[in-house]
Image (tube, rainbow, N blue to C red; front, side, top):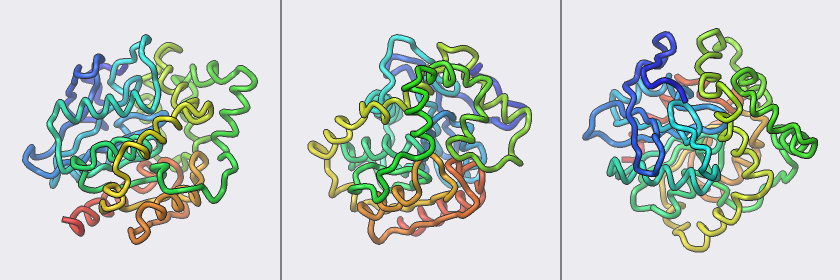
Length: 304
């Protein structure tokens, strides 16, 4: 857990806020007018809200921008007695949204932020107004056209089978850039000492890496699937399909195959816009932040 007041040489100048509503100390950013439309930006593996540092200043001029850190990431607490699954992370997100009494939400989501947003929206469609997906999927859009594992999940499978996965992902404090490159990080020009320190800071020891270890295992061990299926059985998929949506895909993604992300999106939102970027990767917020911020703003304004 990063110190609450850490700004990483001014690159993260946002006031910290904390909620204890779900039984742990969860950090979130809350910037912009309190009476404006709500935009919640959801990060994934193995990042934290820092992924959206170039989104917050521009978007918060027009919207109330909430950027939570998941349990075990960023400035949030890493409890050792909790289960780190998709369901738990969605329940934590739901608790924060209830705590802040947020409505008419526009989600901006990447990586695990997609399944989390999908699982939340299918269960709470009345609270969600729009969804903007970036190198992610909801997993509700039908069968993937390419069922072969991505490079990332091939890597996860190999090291899990060899018994070395916990050792490698348990050292994220020193291997963060290497792991992000396996996932499909592209923008080496963004990397400097401050960047490395910001992304490695949540992981000073192996115990602090539990979130980063468990996220990929939720897919590899198929632990997330029953919760996803439960959403289909008990939630409101038609209400999800009726939401305004957009997709941005960096085509150099090594974690989620772009063709699968696009197919899942089309299965839910056949007439919604899809934007592809040849030189961007899994962490498109790092690669093309200005382009994506403009797309999000245009998307919101075009779907009042």
